[in-house]
Amino acid sequence: MSDDATDSASPDVNSKAATLRGLYESDTILRVVNVWDAVSTKVVADVPGTTAIATAGHSIAASLGYDDGGMPLDVALKAIEPIVAATSLPVTADLDDGYSDPGETTRRAIGIGVVGANVEDRLKAFDESVARVRAIIAAAQAEGVDFQLNARTDAIARGGDRAKADSIADAIARGKAFLDEGATAVFVPGAVTRDDVEQLVAGLGRGKLSVIGLPGALPAAEYEELGVARISYGPLVQRVALRAVRDLAADLYGSGVIPTDTPALN
Image (cartoon, rainbow, N blue to C red; front, side, top):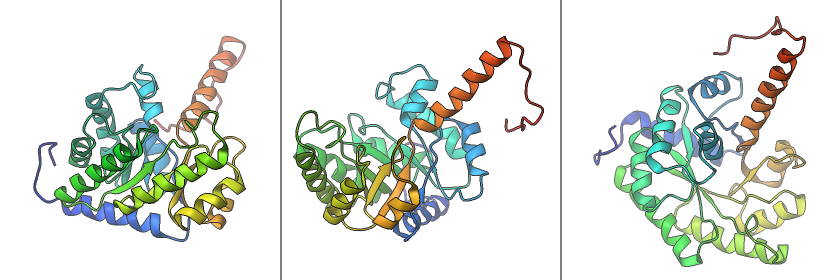
């Protein structure tokens, strides 16, 4: 579908959207290992247990020389397109804050085959944040796609010096409003402890919270037990890969050689 399409979505796109919805609604937590280009997509997609592909906006931006959140929309979509083409799995994309027109951003993302997205509120005013979610859902409905929005609130991540209890209350209020507008799940970065997650699940409902697996966070199985819908790993996946590159380079500058068991993943 071209990015100017206004007709109903293709059967393939609708099928992938339905698959992604089923993954969110399952009692089994949706685990996504974030990718940033075609080859990382192919490697992750080939791993048994991979059911969907999620892009990492931070990682894509870094690979193209941009700061996180500083990548132009046209550049972001151009980078996401080969990721979609590299897999038959549903792709959910990190679309930053939705850019200047989140509805149009969503329409264009659907046009390249994306069937879900993370869009962050950056702790904008409550009404503005809700209106942006509303625009995303309306645009997807106009395209005829059951788009799976993982609506991110930075209520904790950007909460600053306010009490954690106030940030959690804000995350729940924003999240409930996003869900009421049609979001599939609510992504709350910074929800790391069991107590945080229990409060958020109690406020949003089981199967509605999405978290990021940071170093020191709970294991995915424990999040699943608590009723979390999805866990992703954001830029951490690329950081692990880059550490391997750095360590190999240091070894090769010494007395090292390429390991004989290196797989031809590219």
